[in-house]
Length: 184
Image 1 (tube, rainbow, N blue to C red):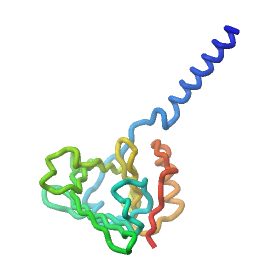
Image 2 (cartoon, one colour; image 1 turned 90 degrees about the vertical axis):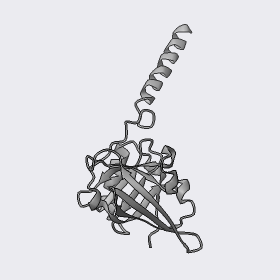
Image 3 (cartoon, rainbow, N blue to C red; image 1 turned 120 degrees about the vertical axis):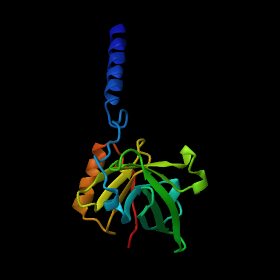
Image 4 (cartoon, one colour; image 1 turned 135 degrees about the vertical axis):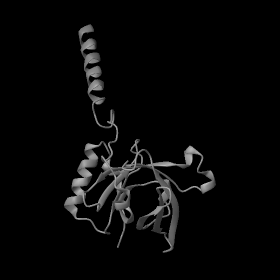
């Protein structure tokens, strides 16, 4: 009897040890792209899919983000979507790079400028995947709570989208949480 209990305990411990090796249990840190050419990133991007979040609860589709250069190496971020009544919902914010001029890590705030000295009004905006032509991008942050897939066009080739999603899985993202965005 004692031998069975010991075997059962050892078996349970081995299961727990193997569980720690799963992506959800011990996710590796999120990896960004090597470098971001911010001027090339400027312009309009259409949201293809996202993890649902509290910022976009009123959005029913037709979501886009337009990035425009500002003085002092800052970026204006204009997010637009359609609300349930057909109205356009717009949020204007500001982004700044963290690190050098090719850093793929940015901080973004949509709070009023007079609050910009508060660290908690700035959110992480990490470019984690970007094609060489700057046409398809994935954006997230260290905790994997947020994820957006954006494109220069309202429709994305299925093979390219599926390949991007596979790379996100390899980065430890739970892609079952992705919600497609209505663009047409």
